[in-house]
Image (tube, rainbow, N blue to C red; front, side, top):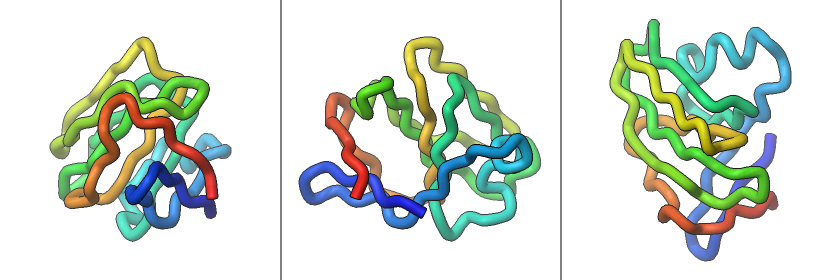
Length: 101
């Protein structure tokens, strides 16, 4: 587990999804922590609640943020990573540079 930070903002615990199964399931079965995926799209098929999503470039700069309702798909072609967080998590500001702590 890692934690992403920027100033006062903290992601809380985040798992790096480095296996296909982790990428496929996303936060569907583990909404207590975040998930960092090296992808340009994520879905919420099978989720019962919304997800907070953050699109990051290769340097960790926030390009997009949003809420992904159940049964939806988000595609951001200009990102290198998508961070999924439990619904209700405060999101970093667009333009923020996130670091790993």
